[in-house]
Length: 135
Picture 1 (spheres, rainbow, N blue to C red):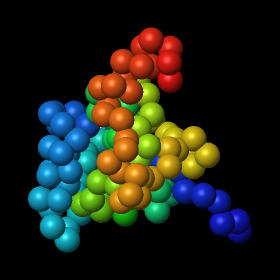
Picture 2: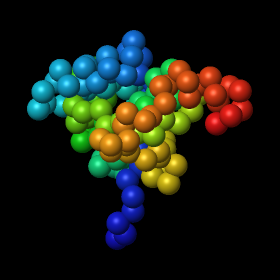
Picture 3: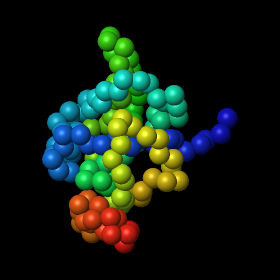
């Protein structure tokens, strides 16, 4: 058995009006899990436990929440259990998509530490620079 890097996923931060709004929603769960619902269990879900859900806001990857586990609901849908934190990442342009998409560890943006978090470009600026072909 190899110690492969965990697989990640991307998802639009639907209904979040800002990154702060997304952070507030995640942190409102306290020590419990933040739950995302999906219709289908990802085929590679076992590889994703220990990985992260990377959030897309304003056409940019802006942060991640570690994935704890997957559980099935009574109605057949699935819960993705997330740590209730938003870890800022180096913003990277990402087109919107429906549902979720896999993201390999090699393609995941780097975390921003406390010293560089204030230096990150706003997601809207990342989006605009990307549209101009400057990112």
